[in-house]
Length: 229
Image 1 (cartoon, one colour):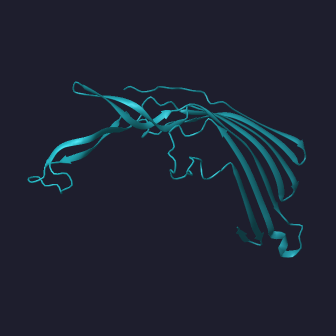
Image 2 (cartoon, rainbow, N blue to C red; image 1 turned 90 degrees about the vertical axis):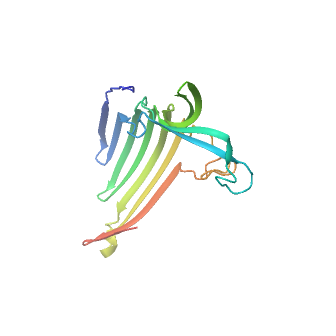
Image 3 (cartoon, helix red, strand yellow; image 1 turned 120 degrees about the vertical axis):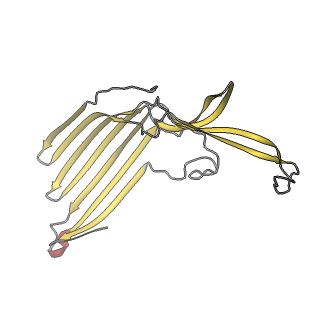
């Protein structure tokens, strides 16, 4: 069967170093692999035929006897296609984190991360040559392909603490904060974006900017009672 064969080695290195009794620095670098799904890797093409019927009396209702179809116009062949030649996506992940345990029930962390992605699998349009009998047709097809490389990089800040120094029941009060910034390059959609498309404004720009994400959570833990919001 035609397709793509592949083999790889996935090395990983993780280091942890205590700078002091309450500060730890961690570094990690690894290679990861993401296999294409069986649906995307199928050796199959589904061809769709669209056309407009031309009636004997245009504008009137179709009738097999009095107003039959006398021709077809605007013939268009399109296809949905799998890709047995897909290669797995690969990623080189690098992380650097500093953790400060400033209290028995509290810590602050600051992390930096970088991910180099290759053989990114995304759906896109392409030309597909199809032979039927002695005739050859060039179709506009849509399906998965390895569409290049890109990077993800960013930073993350986390704070977590239970205020056990407070008197009485207040000592069960806790707070968690998280902020993440993500930037990317080379990960833009390879397909053309039409103006006004759902998820984009009239200028074709994304409506939502998810580069900055923050989470705040307040919790309470005391004598078996636990809540979190």
